[in-house]
Image 1 (cartoon, each protein chain N blue to C red):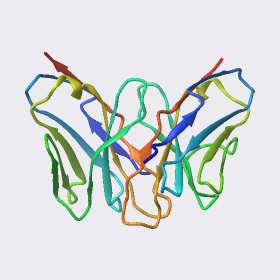
Image 2 (cartoon, one colour):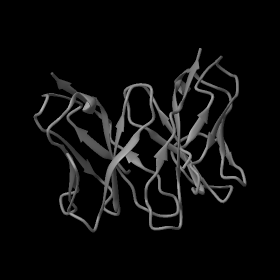
Image 3 (cartoon, each protein chain N blue to C red):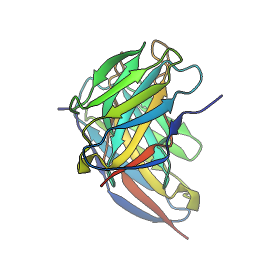
Image 4 (cartoon, chains in turn green, yellow):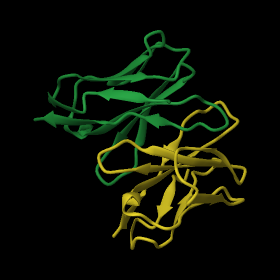
Length: 113
Length: 114
């Protein structure tokens, strides 16, 4: 069945350093890959997304890359700040009339001062 | 622009009871999806509603059911509650039929079954 694997499960980086989270997906028909940030007690917040016709997308300190051939995609956060501490989820979906999102298992990112 | 809202925030039920959770979609959105998030895990797709009909379902038993109303708000109903139903229930709204793929989540309802 459809599956998204996410690594690492926990990540601790020094403030100002970069953080990288990696995901792989199984459904080759997936064509939309959102990333969500979830803070304690809140719902997931969409922070960036990428479509299958694009290899890379950047928004200020956040960038995502997609390798369709290898079915890999990654989130890169540069110049990390304390407010970046949260759980991050990658996800994949086949955009259609029933766009169920398949989520990874999450990465708990901690930023050390 | 009004975001996705859910009620109640927290709920405690006893095994075997029934529960109804509510979701109001973001203004301009016509589709609502429901997800179950167990502690320490990613959200799992339950089902999606579009034009007041179920439009896709995940691996959840029939005792999970839903409704969508003409104003696009939605309900999730769970019958015969089991202990494993304890989780954060999230709804997400989106606009089907357009160029936008994004789904936006509400804050969730924390359900505890004892």
